[in-house]
Amino acid sequence: MKKVFFLLLFTFALCLPVSQAKSIRIIEQPVAADGVLGIKWRQAKETMPTLEEREYDRPGKLFIYTLPGDKKSLYNIELSGCTYLFWDGKFGAVRAYFNGEKNADAFQTLYNKFVANFGLPKKQYTAANQAERQEWTVGDTQIRMDYFRADKAGALYFHSIALAKEMTESKKTSPKQPPSYPNQPDGFRNLAWGMTMPQMQQDSLKLNADTSGNYIIENDSKDFFGLTLDKLSYNFWREQLFSVYAYCKKQDAAKLYDQLVKQYGLPAQKRMQNGSQEYYWDGKKTTIIFYYDENLLFFTSTAIYMEKRTADNKGE
Image 1: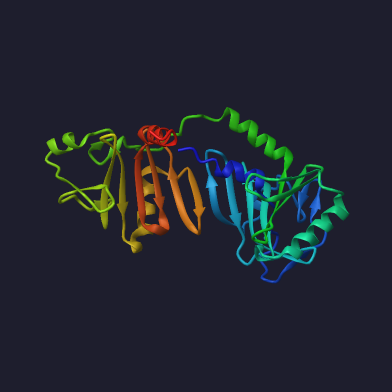
Image 2: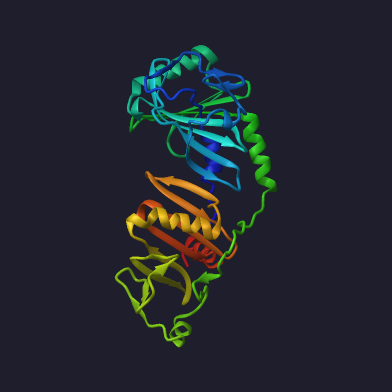
């Protein structure tokens, strides 16, 4: 599964914290040719140990962090929701919202301040997502401000132009196939991807359709890495087994994650979707996704999944 979220976010991202104080840190001159908020581009992550990991893409060398209690004021406009991006261990970008994303006056104030300091925007246009977009360039620093007038929502993005270019060049030489991970299965338990229902029934497995259109195996073992699962369901596409949903008990989510790491190594990616953590093990044979906050573990055939997604996109 291709997940371009992290690569896109680098282009969109912004700034970095220096303090964990809960009081608002006022930044009157936040932008320099070689960094933002007094932090230099390429500054090492090790110099900022208080950052907390939020998302990552290990193969892409991208890590995104937050800082507990992080509060800043830019030109007397309070910022919120700052996320800090590092590529290959070097600080490269940050994203932030202003005034809880709901203040048209804040947008105008920030726009006026940027014009006063950096001149008229280098670019002004309406983006595909309907944001009113303004862009400035200051040395190696690109500033981007998006504003959604209908929602009175705004966001700021700063990033290092040179580091973004390096990341793009690195992407061109990275493997196009998903990386393998240790002990990668080619199915689920003793069931191979691509098996048909008749083949499974020949092995004395009795399949029953559940209310969601998937299938459960009668008297199926719920034991998984020493934990007892709540439910297992099996999914078929074009009469081929291609994925399995495994639901664990809420109190077992942390234990299950630890067992997955022990069995398969650290996940290649971590993402946050609507406050929910998702962990990805991307393999040539099998892709595993653990929806941590939903207590859901998803196994799928990488090849059949991609084939299915292509067919779905074509409306087949």
